[in-house]
Length: 280
Length: 340
Image 1 (cartoon, rainbow over the protein chains, first blue to last red):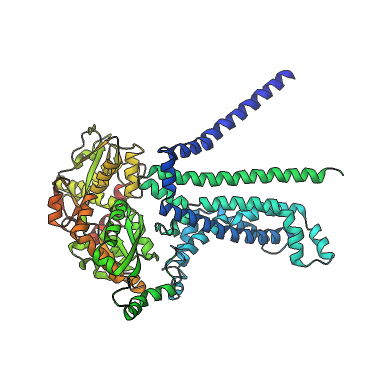
Image 2: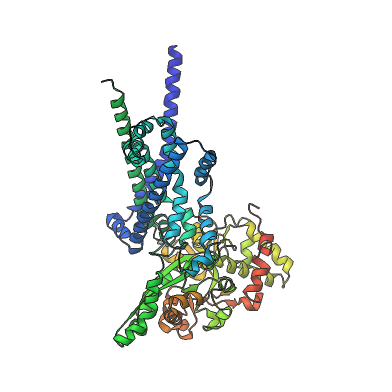
């Protein structure tokens, strides 16, 4: 009994140690390298690299694209999750599969599809050209490509939660005379708010970091259609290694802040759960 | 951000007329030109663009901003065909601009318009080797020796790689007395020595210089000079083979775009600037061989002498060269076996 317990403790320690080592090599070291390389020429050079006009434009564009695409993803995610969790309809499993499509399709394909649809020689190309509307190689194309890759995040967070919660509270609200919108704002939304925020944060992280899909539709116009990940590649290829790592470190920082917020949310959430469950 | 909307475009078109009517000789038109270029010209156009905007004749009439987009030559041509609104294209080889012309975006006779085959600057293909040339690489047939690792990008996506391929092929033909079968066997051995095919010239350069892979990089001369300049430790040297290809990267105004945006005059002035003494000197300073004899003489020490042959002489022009060597199932596909 004691021998087995010691073995168990040893195995546990070894497994934990292994996990820590792997995480350190795969996650920790690259992050450290990004920061070390970014500051290789000191903080002044770091700030100068970030103050470059093309880089500032890239940061601005990235934030704008993330705002637009996360908004779309959120509205879609809430609507889709509500449909799927509350109703049984023909095509429900098909909708579930379609939501997962961006997880299984390569982002490069997502970008190519935009070009094949909205490009000058695409299906809608002649129509768009007649009205002088630009989709690919401009902001709309970048937003569309980003929406495609971020689409599942919010819906996937909400569906299991809403299925678990059931519709009782909403039915109660409706039977007490609340309107549809009142029910949504006062009952549904407060119930899903933490999962919703988690989904939004994950979608935002993905939106800011997306490279493949955006690379295909961007056209790489400097100071106009380069997002931060593309700017990192450009700077690296321009022999401006420190600047590339400086921009990369900002991207990494944004990701870390996102994860930190998510962690704080989860802590807060489990705290409130504990409060609710405590007998009064 | 996105290209100007209809209204602003209309304004841009009508502004010169309106301004001329109201305030003669005072108004400057704000023009934004987009130059879609290939990979190694990043540093060149970073210096050419402000010099162009500052030209007295240009500055008197326009307030010009030039936007740049860089990438593999073939991929860039593809984007312009798919709707990227380039006022001018400055690509690695004529075939890529031919493809844009075939898609109807510019007139077929584009190459006859500006002088010198539409190429204001030229380059050639040289070898970049590690300091001291430890593998003693001097000529093209050294590349096929067993145990030599050669870095060159993928001719399917990179313009520079196509020049590399044709330069090597011509050298092989000369050794084999013009025998195609032997030249193909030579290329097969050469590509057996290639451990990795990058998509663009800059990627291949970084593979060789920063990742430390390979014994020799087949590179644009300008790209090789730049890599030496960027390397503070002096870890590389350039080997110029006795004979190589005269690479002529062409430039063109994209008719469909400039006519719609009303930027033809500025776009044309931009390309003409490349041929001026000042433009030529900037090219030479960035290691592109200038067309101007005077500037070429002034920079004579920079550019080594070697026998240069053109693609027209040896391969009958880009259309034929493309079909024979780089089309699907053509000679490149026959000699290159991935992992082989």
